[in-house]
Amino acid sequence: MPTIATTVSFNDGTNPVVTVNGPSMAGSGAYQTLPITVTEESAGRTLWSYQMTSKKIRLWPITFNTLTLTMKDNLLDFFFNKAIGPTNPFNYIHTDGTTYTDCRFGSDTFSPRRTERGTYEVAIVLRIEDQAIQN
Image 1 (spheres, one colour):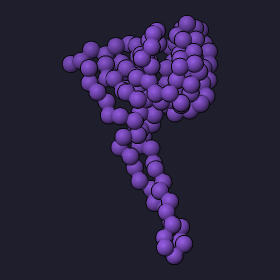
Image 2: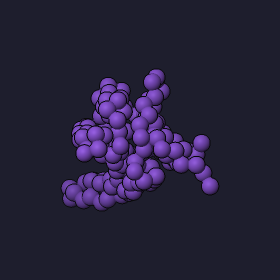
Image 3: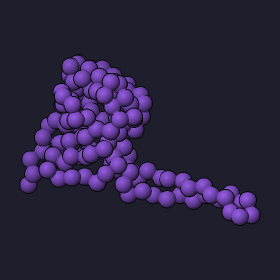
């Protein structure tokens, strides 16, 4: 049985790698396929559209709820200055050791909140474009 780590990492190929406490449950967050709508015009000028599903683009909501102040600040810096919200791709290493490449954040907002325990909580959505690669 594989060992489950308690941290996850964000890496855009430069140093330092950002490591934060993982989600409260290993593997938390469920994949949702990102729908793609295609709109076309027929020869008779009729517009029609249909929805396709891509198996290569998935949205994965993850909540980190035990971040220290330093972890929150490092993740905030990574979000705004390296990933630049949903703009730049990065690698994400989950608690089970699976590396997801070419990830992007699914939003341009980063809203941490302080918990009663003195830690920070932040919910993110990862947009994963490639299949997972096992280490």
